[in-house]
Image (cartoon, rainbow, N blue to C red):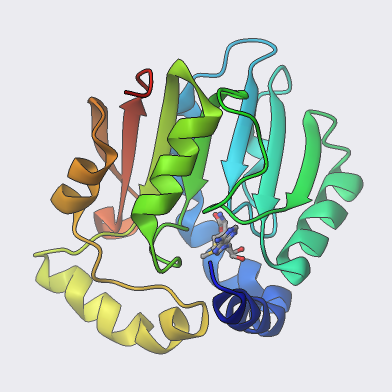
Length: 211
Ligand SMILES: C[S@@+](CC[C@H](N)C(=O)[O-])C[C@H]1O[C@@H](n2cnc3c(N)ncnc32)[C@H](O)[C@@H]1O
């Protein structure tokens, strides 16, 4: 991301972090839990969560997993760190300030990489997928849960009313599922719906060695 984009993101989330969980906690919980369940972490597996936010998902990982989270917003990360301390989540190894489009990890560092409600916040979702793929071991799982463009009239009505909220967290509603899946250039293992009215989709890709 450019410096300007980073500054805009940090400002937006500094404003929203104190109330983020109230608006996006319970309502998106099913998708978070589904993403973790579909990642099926083996005992000792090292999981990366990209765009970890306030750490709403962290208590849902099995205690035998080792979790690292990254995010670019200092305000969101501060909330995640406080949650880990308060809930004594020993399986969370690190919460780092890092750009998901330019990660500092070595290739193949993680057994699985998970990204929740974040790909439509970044200007270049393709770049996030490329980085997720790079830092995941070949054969590992990449799990993405997000809202995509929908034909459902009911959901379109919900989108209309949620527009101001989405605007505040820089969340776009126009990400196309088929185009996004094609971007990954990886086999899709499963596509499932989650959350009220099937608002979100959980995608599981199997990572392949880089060409
Ligand atoms: C809509 S929130 C989702 C937070 C959390 N994953 C959840 O389930 O609620 C998007 C998060 O992605 C983070 N984010 C956006 N762009 C990022 C980037 N390029 N690198 C790292 N984190 C980013 C934001 O700071 C924010 O915490």
